[in-house]
Length: 412
Image (cartoon, rainbow, N blue to C red; front, side, top):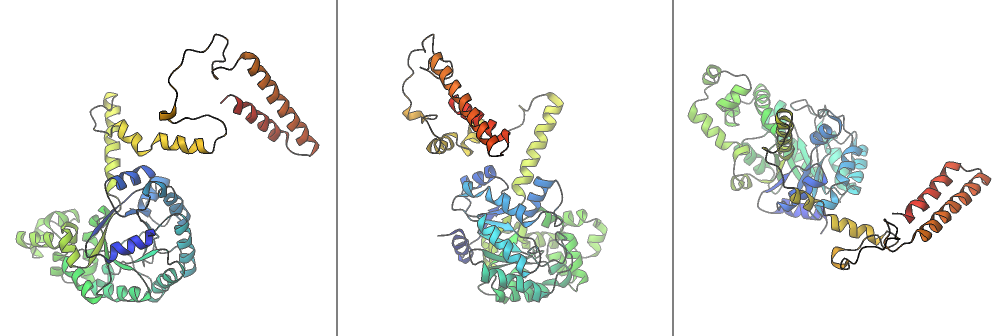
């Protein structure tokens, strides 16, 4: 079963699958070891780690694909879902990006319809153009699962989301991703409008932080204050958005209402409730990265303050080396390396007597005379190559490097 087939099977199941974010081979290995059946590569994470910049369309498809290619060995058969932003151009660009993702080992992607990459709450492009990109990907790159994201909720409310998700599903999307829709009742209404189409949601910290802003924008698009309240404007969220207690109270957000809203939010719902609302995949794109950065900041501060990282809890060294197994790597090298440079530990002979006084220190059993002869041969070979290069008009430096390589091979 290919990665795309495995991912489609997960989307077709009647339960929720959680896909955490990974961003290098070590975090990918940790996710697999934890038992995850799908993982996610975030454009925000790649932009931050590679460039130290926010996700504003700076990172290109090739950079996402390059990072994805480093994860495949650690992931094995676990499917990888990657961010493709808005497709990096028109339908042709989206298809070429899809080809690059397949070569990099990506099994699925999510493509959005924002007019400005990286701008949450921004206006969306025309539904026809967005649907064309999805149709082109579904037709030309069937090796990829296509998850169609829409950010219409902030400006056009749930009705706009349903309209676009219907168009994207008809264009061939395997699943829909209603950005900004956090209320279980609204997700259920979307599910009723698109029976049989899997829903993907994100539990990104960025989504949570921008939720109040999105709900305010949705309210201006005709969504009532009560609906915004049911989407999760609790006292804490309202406070974060700059709404005072008095303002929240005047909007009718009582303790009981806020408590009920918190329960109805998808961000805090259990898997059974999410599955009943049609959700089949939950992305956690930044959770592991933010946790790792918090731990790193604590270590750096501790070293700066005390000169030691000892008080900070860290992964044991043995657990770290288990994520990058040395023996398997050495055995791979040995299969394609001339000579007898590596012997697996279980095949090594018992330690013998120390080398004789005349033995070469780097090559047991090799006499100084033999070493001198090998060195002479290496120098002669390098000289022959230099002369050959000079006669053929080639660069002398190449011949010198060749000779030195021969010399190094004899003493490695």
